[in-house]
Length: 237
Image (tube, rainbow, N blue to C red; front, side, top):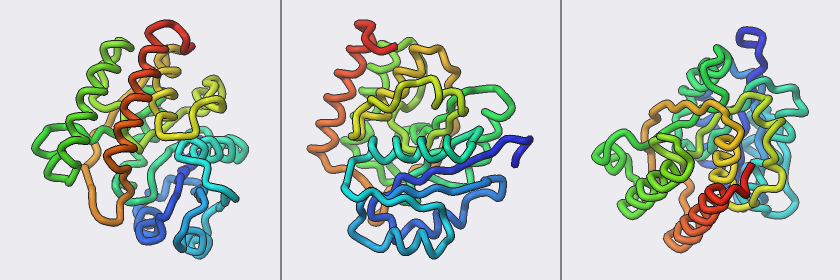
């Protein structure tokens, strides 16, 4: 327990066998429990997770990134989490930073924390983010900020932390099972006036880290624009 708050880290996993152990090893001691949800991986992700002693849940079918997160949050709430930190187990995000995400929420500065990979163009590209993804990220984020009235530096990060009440009040269960789940969730949070903070995180793109291809990225971008327009028209509350 950190200041009498139970902190649970959730790992939405798909083919993360090569990076999972390092991710878990770098998590801070303040974490009370680690939950891994495997979305029907084709590698040894489940075996590694069980060897590490994690709380493991395995999907019988591949449901998608959003479906994986839904299971993660249901389990974390059932386990009594006060703070839930979601981080990809592909080691693209630095697990050591989890403690700062949790502290900002525990100390009641924010309800939601995001890990932003966008500090400067040079730094982001040097970390391996493909050029087309960098510019797509910037364009989408600017558009989403204009529509929502926010001033976030990145809407598309895979490292996030939530206060329990956020997960209880937002209707994320009916969101997409695909990657656009994250954008839907943030627009829902904005609609409910939750306080959203950011922490810069290093950019780490490498062979073993997960990454969707150009066409999946294009589909994600178009779906994100659609969600933003639905928010602007008042359909997201």
